[in-house]
Length: 117
View 1 (cartoon, rainbow, N blue to C red):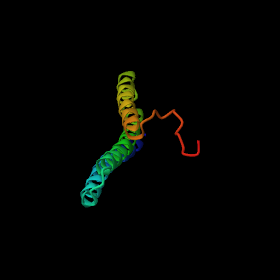
View 2: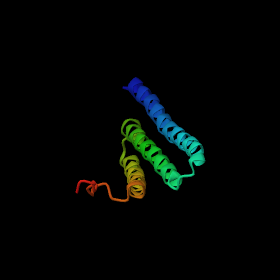
View 3: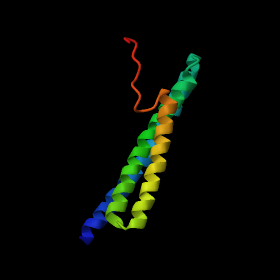
């Protein structure tokens, strides 16, 4: 069982790295795309930058939540650490929902309005 905890600890660190890398590469990609699109002088370049950056942050947060869950469940599943995990997941979920509302202009449970309606 001890070896399993070591391997899952390593996997958790890898997943955390992937989450941070996702946010970093997404931000870098968004900024490069924005700088290239500045030459077009369209009014929606800034909006596209915010949406692209927000999407990469959302994806990175979801990956980091998964890493936190793996870490807490395997490493030290006591009530205190599970409570801290719950608080972290709650905060990150609130951040994710806020970003999604900012990007899409609606809550996740609201139906998207299509042009056919």
